[in-house]
Length: 442
Image 1 (cartoon, rainbow, N blue to C red):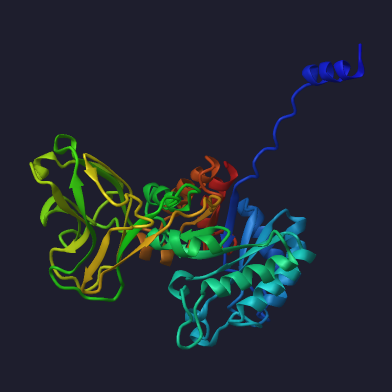
Image 2: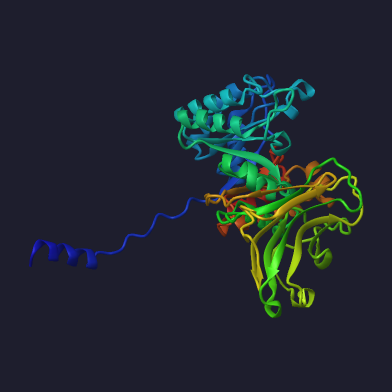
């Protein structure tokens, strides 16, 4: 038998090696550190309590004491010996100086923080990344007058600085579920490695957020109608795109498109998506509620024998609002029986964009497909925050039930993991005991 034939026979008969299993889900805890009388963190007790919890991850907040950065460096080897991974956790401009507290020693020099965390990660590989609190309210596309704001330029510098020291260093912003919408997907998502999202109301809210983290989200071009926050409007304010379409076959005149918005609350009767034909409303959908979908509209009854019609697609205000920030996207436009200059809303040649009041519209070309962004779910663990967020009794059973909801999604591979917000870690605490039973079964 020739050598090549022998090799082929060996490869065919050799057992297949299984693929590497996925990493275990993150099962973690944040903050509520236990301290010694001198103010330093009680490192050994923290390790024991995290082990009692069956946690494999801890988010280390650098804020409460000027020695927190120093204590983190001492904590990392002990955590590594206990197979616990660690993320540094910083506060942004909006929390710096609150109560006289800062993330010391580098405060709001976030490029320096990325560099130093990267250096420490290189020495202690169980330091895998860092998180910045209340991130989205500190995110800005351009620098603010006082110099604050996480701009794309600053985020690029932070990523470059951190990964220059530790190539696998991760940065996740802390966000809230209503913030994970269209604006996030089109502006912030390209500059981060994942997201920590706090206080989900239910499983549906988590799965809605996952849509905006998907690798397939918003790869098509489209037009966005936006209404800014902290702004009032008047009835009749609007933003739309319009074009005169030649009617080529009135019997089969149709239009279809995808529409999405970043508001799912119950408030209705204000912002309304509409398609108008010669100023007649032929389709309407309230921005309020869960309504992202593809729509197909038969235009034959509205075209009749006309040689051309004026199509207008956008958002109109039925009533004035005092505060109702929203973004609406229209994409994947298709027509039959009509002729347009283009149906590509990413390059709206021949379309007229117009607005009245504070509304504005912009159209964007298709985006390059990006990797799926992982999600770490952060349910409330402290009794005060639990009661505040969910308006129900903060019992060990209720805290554990919401924790299990998130942990189950992690086990299913939908989320990267779960990290509890401020679980009380004092000895014999029943909340920790209940949470430990959830983690133990994952």
